[in-house]
Length: 146
Image 1 (spheres, rainbow, N blue to C red):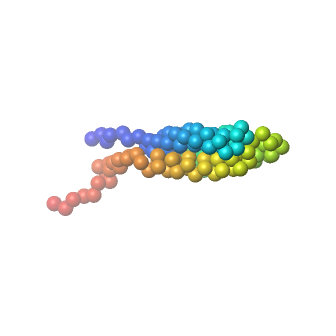
Image 2: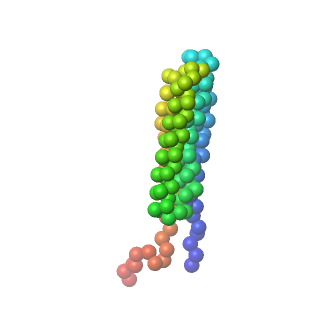
Image 3: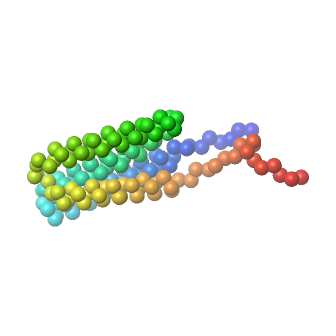
């Protein structure tokens, strides 16, 4: 007796797909609103904020998807190292940006926060939405009384 193969990565791929979609919507909305409110500096703040927030969250989702087949200890070390690396990259980008004034700091901050919330929410929705059937093998089926 053969059991049908299920795609266990489907929720992870859906989470990544919804996260990217949420980020695209956020980039468009924040760029328009930032441009209206703060002009060209608002546009730059929205674009940079979307890039920072999207980079931080989407790389985690992509890494989880690509490392899903690794041993749990190696996967945990990979996640920790990537989190430290992402944090360092964001801190360096913020330190470099601090010297310049071509962007709106308020728009940058609000867009980063919005990116973290929207993309994380979209990924959560994407991960919980797909239905992955759970198949019991003949060994795991409870014996019925006869």
